[in-house]
Structures are given as C-alpha cells and as structure tokens.
Image 1: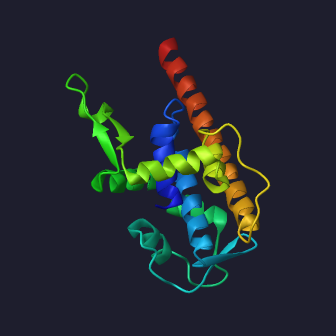
Image 2: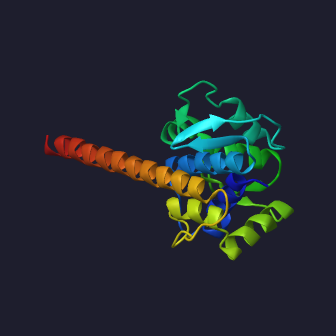
Length: 201
C-alpha cells in the first residue's frame, strides 16, 4: 500500500465522522504521493523544487503516473505548483482506482439515488494496513490527515533522512488547503450576496 491509498481509506472510514472537502483531500493526496516518491529515492527536494532522480517502477499504477508527470527540466517544479497541478481531481482518481480493485465498495440503498451512495473500505489487507498506520500515529500519514482535518494533531518531532522533506511538503499542503478554504469562503460570500439581491427584488 501507498500513503495516498492509506490516506483515502482513513478519510473514508477511520475518520468518517469528519467529512473532508474533495479539494483538500486532492491536495493532500498529491503531497502524499510526493512523499512516497521522495522516500523511494525517485525524487529529491532542492529547497522547494522537485528534482527527478533515477526512474523506476513504483509497483503502483497511480504512483507510476505521478512519476511520468514529473517536470524533467530545470528549474523544475515547486512543491506548491505540483500540489495544484497533480492534485486536480486526484481524490476522484484514487477513489475510482480503489473501487476498481475492490479496496473500497459502494454502499447502495434502494431508497437513495445512486449519486448519494456512500463508499467505504472493504475488509481487506489494505484496510488493515491503513488501520495499523492510523492507530500507531505514524507521522507521515498523521501529518497529511491533520492537514485535511481528520486527525486532531499532526505528529511532530520528525526524524530520519526524509524529515526535512516531510516538513516542507506538509507546510505546502497546509498552505494550499488554507488558500482553497479562503476561495470557498469568498465564493460563499459572493453567492450569499447574489441571493440577497434576488430576494430583494
């Protein structure tokens, strides 16, 4: 399993009482992909720039797609730009992939239209792996889960060779999620103002 897959399972199941905005989750999934690529040695960070390294198969179709989309030319892509570009619609991409392989299933109700069906992780080794990471407070998963509001506190005191990279990526994810929240709030204000105009006529 990969960090993005574990994160999606956590968001759908383990923290189902805290609904996650799809845009926020997409940004966090893109950050989680980047950390998996860093930990695999496929990329490194030079400041906030993503520098491709030796290319190899990642044993995961979606991570392979992430590798193939890397900017291969200097000055390379920033972490922030990666999050916005790679993250576009990424939550739905992962949801569809996990549905296709049976990792998550759609819970259908006869009296509820299909578009409102809820997806939930099936009992599987994938779910058990995600549960183990979640309950252990594993810092990478906890950090991304906190960024989208499904974990109370991110882990801290990161250690190891990827610690600096993790701090950089998590900071970029948190900043992007905050920016997206501001955009949503502005749209709500504008919509409310528009509705008030119509009510006043």
